[in-house]
Image (cartoon, rainbow, N blue to C red; front, side, top):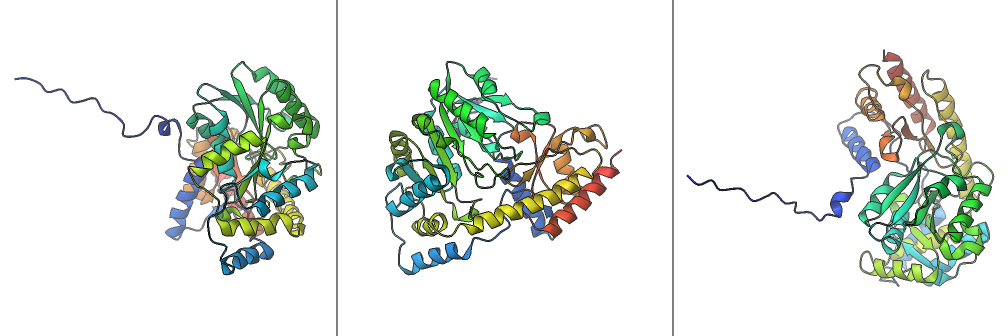
Length: 401
């Protein structure tokens, strides 16, 4: 009897979508929401989202835009007023000299990064990524066909990145480097001298510097700087900005990019075939954000510093946990490796899973950020949540033998 061979299995999906994974932070958020829906009381340190509300003057500008029927299409790159407002804000704060046609407004900072990688990176191009890194960098690079080249930093040196470390990773295929300062997940800040040296080195080697400035205004060192201030290197700098964390506007999806006119034009061309313009209402609310009173930014930064100290003090009182002092953003990144081998725990992922299921504490394991010994907690929460979470973690870790 003849045997009929089955046809080889083939995926219905494109090869490029199989290069990437679901965002680890979004996966954790989804599981936390599921547990909350069943009535579980969680101490949620998972999502990187401000606990502050969007300031009233920004919300009012959005309401007024709706009432004025500013609800139609705009230019893909945004209305002239928002692009002018962004370049003016960046100039006032960092001494840069961008023009409105060197700015594109995007649906969140992540889209600015995605579009930048898509227009700059070809198959086989290398992108230097310091470790630890934001979870989406690796996948966005790989989606474009690029190769992430990871530069390890040392926890003992507060995850410091230097020009010599970057230079050692450069090859003939190096096309770009991503710098995120302050950092998600570690809260590390690149020192001004190191930042200048890295930017100048990259310019000399004709490597693009992608400055992820999502947390640039949440810098606790007193030296709020932008790598784009090195105006002599402007041809190789691309600023990727976000209003989400600065103005507590995460759900508004407001981001932007500043850079050389040809790159911005290419990003706008790509955007014209994907999202088109960002929500018109959001654009007008964003004008109020960047052009209006900035006291809210300073107030939120002070608030984050206070709750950082609260959670850090609590972490340091849990035997076995060690944690660097975050210099910005709103994350702590404790090392949990002392607990490996206890109570069946083998990894940071095990720690995060057990904290969620047994202690009802939400955090993100370090593996998606490029380190195997850490968990990330967002302290953009209220003081009672911090205290509750710390007590639950103290009980959980002390129970491990």
